[in-house]
Image (cartoon, rainbow, N blue to C red; front, top):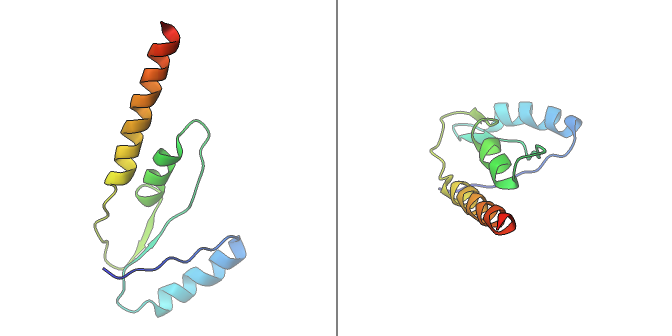
Amino acid sequence: MAMFEVNVFTPEQFGAFIPWLAVWRGNLSVLVHPNTYQPGESQAVNDLKDHTERAIWMGERVPLDVSLFQRTIVAEQTAHAGDVRHTAA
């Protein structure tokens, strides 16, 4: 599937771009998502939530392969569990 990425950095850019996109996207599906950081959550957790829970779709939703985020989260949890066991010993 062909795709591209556009980054907007200010509320003004977002406010100008999203209405333009809504009018001119034609029959294309568009995923709009933030790039957030929530204290206390790993970046992989934030990335997963940004692409799922915090995302907005224009047009038909396209199934996303989020397995990279999920594998990264599991690896981080496994590494953290190893750190906890190591420091507790």
